[in-house]
Length: 97
Image (cartoon, rainbow, N blue to C red):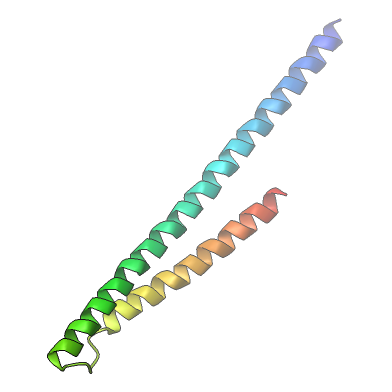
């Protein structure tokens, strides 16, 4: 009878550990997805800013120059970060399969 309870206790511990790992994996996955969404939203804001700036320059007859380089560089940097995060997420998911 003692073996039964000992085995039951081990099984309960294993299940609890497995649930804890799965919860941690879910939290990590959601954290990475949230970071990706945040980076994409920032790029969308900059796209709008670029559009507004280009249109204003167009209206003023000044559509030339490098006024947009800073915003373009920020978008490019976040796009690279999004790619890294998506790769990280894929690797994380693969490791958990």
